[in-house]
Image (cartoon, rainbow, N blue to C red; front, side, top):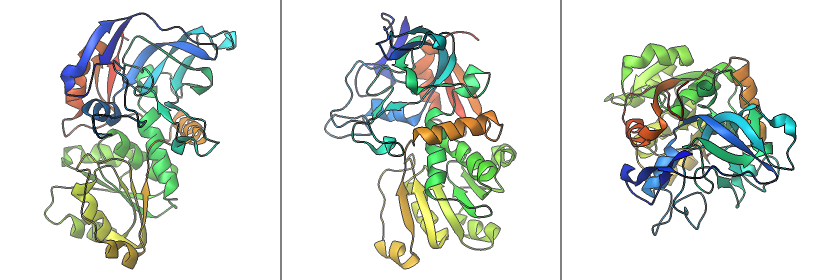
Length: 347
């Protein structure tokens, strides 16, 4: 099969297209013919070494074992099953839950042995992938491409909204609202949980599209008076922040939060370190959450909401599998709206 491997930590030159053997499923696994794989920050940061120190990076302390096939947002068709898997799964169109874990129900994502597809296991930048049968779910939409954009970004966004316990009518600020997680934060907070959303982006050219996703207001982080604009359009402080940016908007976020407000972060594309005056936290009674991924129950809830049309796929661009370098380079450009996809075959 054709696959794209990361051969070590570094730039996109560490991505190599290779011909390797099709993997064979173990007794509790299935072989999936990959139809679509969406790109996430996680595989780019893994390649760049941004998750670890001392030349080790990945979801586990020991770092990634190279070569590794990245990719975690995967849809496809089951074409072979292990000997402990029901034959009825053959031919099913599925979306893959993106990690394994021995954690109890509700704590799977924080278990010490949580291992991620595309980091600890070979992932979806390939024509085929093997995965545990019980972590394969029916696709929520008929389209492989549209069903592939939710797994990691959607699960992360759903868990973020769950963590801060958004109530109908509350105001939530969403940073990076044009990106994969951000655009889903807008939809989930507004369309599923009934919040009022203030979306923060760079380029206001996509303002109407983001309002269609559920945002009440769309503001640019390039504004010289962003804090004042947020307070003006909301007529006062906001209830919560869902952040994927990090340092660049951190002080603004804390400034516009109400006393007793909540701040939840799942990314740091705008800076991984910041200055924090602890007095801001305790004097304003702010609760802070770190968030990534979520539980299997949340994954199922998200798929149901997608199937019901409450959350819609947002796709910016697709690339063929052998253009993975170009796709990851494009992913890091500013001004996109939605997900970037790799397609192993023409559809």
